[in-house]
Amino acid sequence: MTDFLLVAGLSLAAAALVMALTAYAASRTGRVSVVDVAWGIALVAVAVVCAVLAGTWQSSVLVVLVAVWGARLSSHIFTRARGHATEDPRYVELLGGELSEVGMGVAVRKVFLLQGAAVWLVSLPLQAAAISDTLDWPWLVWVGVAVWLVGVLFEAVGDAQLSAYKRDPDRGPVMDRGLWAWTRHPNYFGDACVWWGIWIAGGLASGWVAGLCSVIAPITMTFWLVWVTGARLLERSMMKRPGYPEYAARTSMFVPLPPKR
Image 1 (cartoon, rainbow, N blue to C red):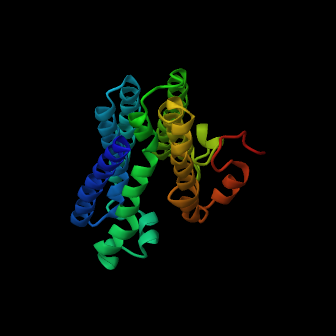
Image 2 (image 1 turned 120 degrees about the vertical axis):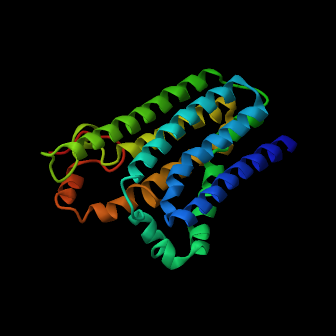
């Protein structure tokens, strides 16, 4: 129990510290969307805390997985955000207005506290690996790495294809090439795979009890990516674009499937 309280408490403290610094950055820039950059950084911080406390090769592998994913995601979002001087429309809708209109109190309650709690919840497989005394199924660590790799490839390739589409002067009204012909959100699907892989490598590999106690993490992450801050929220605005409803009719929203004719 002591180990659990120590790991859980320090993991929560790491997430809270990153979110507090992010809230300060938001107050200085006037944009709540900076939290998207901090999301990956916060999870890397928790992974490092868990690895230091555990001192096992399994937790070391998990740090590498989270760090590679977090560095790629945060750098990609930061690079993309530099070209936009306004707030992300998703956060305007979530807050009920711009940050200058609703105030930091609303942003802290609706975004930063929620994101900090989400970081702690999603990191449960990392915590489970740090708490577990034994590694019941070590081969599952490498199964998790394989699932993680599929996810990272979907994210990286999907983002690269979207960037190439935006640079193409002869592009059509809707991105429907490559992975985007099979799923309307390859980056969100990839993100879900990443965290199912980390759960397999961290939670399930540590035993059925650890796996059962931490499976809520990838389930919650997938739910958020599909229904809360991810695909469904983005689709509300995308459906207003010319050609997007037709694209949606022939293309799977989340799980990659062959496009319909």
